[in-house]
Length: 615
Image 1 (tube, rainbow, N blue to C red):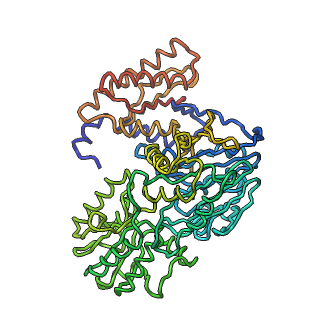
Image 2: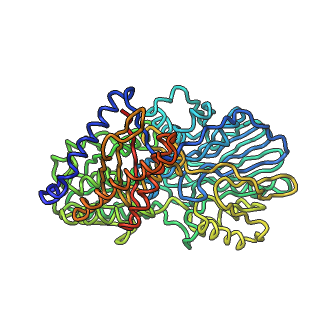
């Protein structure tokens, strides 16, 4: 609520604000009697691309739709003749300047225009940056078959069920020993280690060449799930010669800047066990809900040291249920109990596994840190373990949560203190090992920004590939072609816009909606309401002006009065020059005038919204 000083200085605006609020309410109730015009960019008409010429040339075309200009929304398209397959269809969490956006998904315009030729979508593993886009794109693509391993499909089913499209979807389980025939394509698989079980790389062959897509991977001799990577299959692929040799390796670049080898999950399990054994009070471990192997290690240690476990966070509960039902988690009877129940037990008998390791605003750990969690109140003597690295961009949010936990008396354990988290992505030695196993003719680094992929390409030189054998996509939408004569980048580009998911809507991230949100966030909004005669277009009275986030108290009255005068002058001036001007043109003219007045007077550029009510 505003304090008395601010409220008193704005008395001159309250009447107008109330009038505008009543008017908007009335418009919402009865839009047929009055005309409301909002000055904004008119959206372009949607073009019909239902019929496109088929790709008849004997070339294997490779088109990344995501994952090369960001970390996330991974998706690649492979096309030969009349056959198209995609590998992965993930989403990306929004960037800081994408106000109000939930997710970003790949631009599937190219696939929509050719959906009858899609033979399937292969999913390498169950992380959201590889499966998160499916619920949004499958209906637009006519529900092509989706192929994935058992756990991957279990996680996909949960998402599709929440979106109400599970029954229409065509989900087909694969094993790493399977061979799929998808039109002219043949897909075989090899198991890789990552931070979630049931991950595969893909060996894709066509009449003119073959590729290997690694998915996300690392080499771990002691993985949490005790299931090793199938290096024998990788070596067999690399031993092929002549035409059968892999033309291009598309390989994960997320950790390409980091020397050495990624730490084994066994080391992390030992560190977590040490914390659990030595801690006297209650333990709260925050981790990613997809780290099924890590969760298994925590459960094993909890049972070993006589603690019961509670889960907090919707995604944690869902993923544990799915993994347990499918046999990927072994949970002794009675070990996991409802969080309401364990909160009443002695602290030294309790271990809570929670979401929120990235400081997400509504996550369970964040709510604990501000005293807003329904069942868990942080007490002095609690130990909070952050078993995750902050993702780039989340550092401030994580630091804020840690500060709040410390204020409440919690002890903090993170990777700065001991090894309690490791990446699921291979570092330089892992990437080099993949190169030496697959022995491709060419390398095209994927999954990461250009600087990451550039570092990866240098490893290609280290194993003997020349400059002519290293291909760096400039970004999403680039097109590579492979045929018997070799590999080349074309000048063609397919649509690769940022398609955002905002509540129930989807659209281009360059849309006027996001532009307006950014302007409002930085400079506030100024609304001008005209009441005009429907026949003569003459104003009935002075315009109403309402501002939010634009003016400070001491300048409000003076600036509002000036904006009213300038808005009235601009309105009358344009109609004097062009009496037939429609409301849209009048609003845009007023907007341009007030933009200039605001910038000259205050060096600010709010979102100016002129509205005309014809009465």
